[in-house]
Image (cartoon, rainbow, N blue to C red; front, side, top):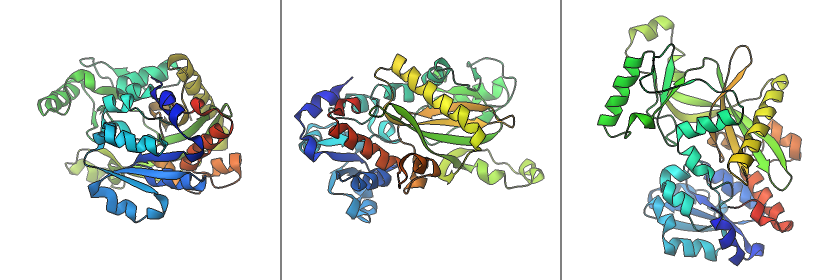
Length: 356
């Protein structure tokens, strides 16, 4: 599982490059790497390169592929290794290259490689959170009676696409069977049936530093989703009279600052997550992770999902969030924080602490 630690033995640590896939939070990652003085590499498909050439001052080397899984081909890996590349995985990584390629990639990866398999399975993610002692919504089994509003989620990082709401067992079963018939999922076990907690969404961006041995809260955001966020602007009478099925496709992010008195539980959750990862997935989480939550009106916080990598909500804070300023007293995006951790690891001869 520590393939990257074997590969990096061959690297010239004075000439490390930071690389990522052209999607999700790539611009932020590249910008942060440049701020910390690193050479940068972007792996991108041909149909996207024109976007990144608009920001060519952030990219020292383009590696163009026909399909994302080409990153696992020997010729691409050889080029990346020749450049001493450390890969930064983001939220599109597994969805694009596939779990098998993502796990087996013979390249140093910043972060915890073994968490990819957990992230790819909604039910495994929820079990992880429960084992960490973090408050989560109730989960239902397929065929179980439903006694309230539920949201049914599909596997993978699809930005909420295909999620649906239901109130009864029959609604859930009929829709899931329809998804199976269409080939969208293979079986009912692929879907997560979860209590829909009514409250305000809040997505907390953390960074665990193995070099400093501390959990940092670097920011937070609210996701903007279509068409559920459009529907809430309509009068209730209008919603009842039109035939629109709510959807939860994420199209952007909104900045957020939390009531300071609530930070106690936010830090508690972050530390519980880190400690659980050390016990269940040693050596534990490395770098960015996000707890995706709902805050109820009694100020309790339910975590309904997590990401073990950088999330797109951090793109809001290229010059740092109010929280990152409190740690560093300088502009510190999540992308730059990743690069800073790599730089500190190299300076302290501890690079194996941050790659797997």
